[in-house]
Length: 234
Image (cartoon, rainbow, N blue to C red; front, top):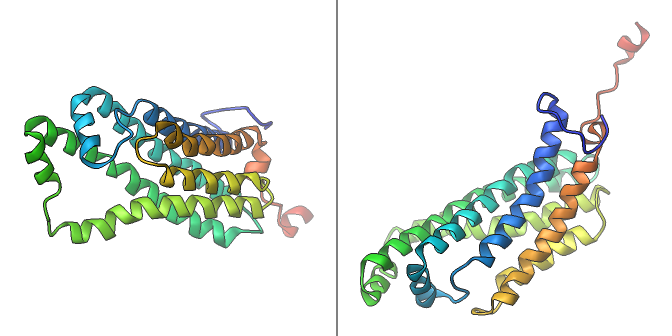
């Protein structure tokens, strides 16, 4: 079947489209979530802004959550098309990226928790509650928060490198993922313009790769197995 065709009943067509659309939709949702973010500040100032804009904050967190959720089928699709070269790297990076994206998506729930605290308590009391020394943090931070940040950022860069090594994209793909992630995490606090540059670069890189998957033929996506010698002789 030719590229860009779609069918719910054809497993190759449906899975190729699911992966391609996800690679476009995931970074697009992340960019949109940052556009409507109530604050580009950090810490206490950010939480005060969130409390003053509860509906906007809820939409921001929801879109950011689903942005990372939609990365999962796209990641699986990229691992699927890497064959012969870069396979081991794709498997390792893909597994790390999926685990990291799932963790990252769940971290958005903390926005809703902080929003509720800052809406119900005076600012100084809310700050004390959210910054309290909680023994659970000694488990949550290394087991949940750090994997939720490190694994998807590093894993996506390595997966893009595996896709490039497999000959499925040019150098621009791993370069855009690396640059987008680096700019995203290093953007100065309080500068929404610079905060958006990284995600926009990710949208360009992953969006182009998503279109590449959508334009693949189903045979490129999943080559049919060659007949065995005995079957061919029969």
